[in-house]
Amino acid sequence: MKSESMGKSHAKVILIGDHSVVYGQPAIAIPLPDLAMTATLKERQAGQVVLTPNYQGPMEAMGEVYEGVRQLITHLLTYFDAVEMPFTLEIESKIPQERGMGSSAASAIAIIRAFFDFFETPLSDQDLQKWANIEEAVTHGSPSGLDAATSASDVPVWFIKNETIETLQMNLEGYLIIADTGIRGQTGLAVSVVRQQMETKPKETQNHIEALGAIAYQMRNGLSHDDLHEIGQAMTDAHTHLKALGVSHPSLDRLVEAAIAAGAIGAKLTGGGVGGAMLALTETKAQAQAVIKALQQAGAQETWSQHYHKK
Image (cartoon, rainbow, N blue to C red):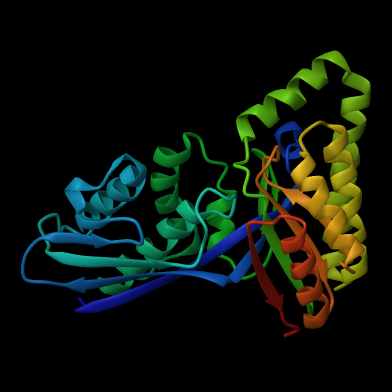
């Protein structure tokens, strides 16, 4: 057993599959290693203390928002036969919360890795996912496993609901920019909008869903061939279909248009939509900076960027 250990993870974002994944089409989630999370576990004389950006205090007094984390820690302590062990667990995060970037899954992955390292116990990828689902089930009800898989992976994850979770190889050189509209995304509302369209305009809606599925295969091809332009074009095409499904928002459309006008190879909303965040792709750092400036001028509240390097 160590006196101090560390676990790391990172954010993720949905590249393609927003909404269409509900209807059996593939999704691709892509890791954001620059938006990192670290959990540091240390022994102490007495008490079980958790330090996070928004809560510092005893584990037992953690609020409802941290219930998934509290239950996960409790399960881990039981597993390692250390229920009464005094500790300090410090979580440091660069991941924005409630922005579809997998902050809860990332915190679970980092905590699990820290505990297994502390007790010097090997941890397989399969077991890591099982443990992460404890936290995710409390926080999200019935998690797909996509967030946890991508927060633990350095490469994109290909996902088909109730069927497949597999990693994809990627060797891109480029910049992915994420911009927040400042309007809280409304996933539940967006999902019901698509469901309603499926009932009232089944053929047209199904065509958009299938087109998004075809775009996912196009993106998979772009990732495997390191073709930034194929990925970018696919992103912009996907946004057109998502807009037609009624899950975009004037603030998202404005940011997508501003990014493309400023030189982005492609841009689209990400996640639930009806507010929330969007993505833009550029080839160079100078282009990324120009796009970020244009997004801020078009009303983006916050922007983040991820630089992917050729290996």
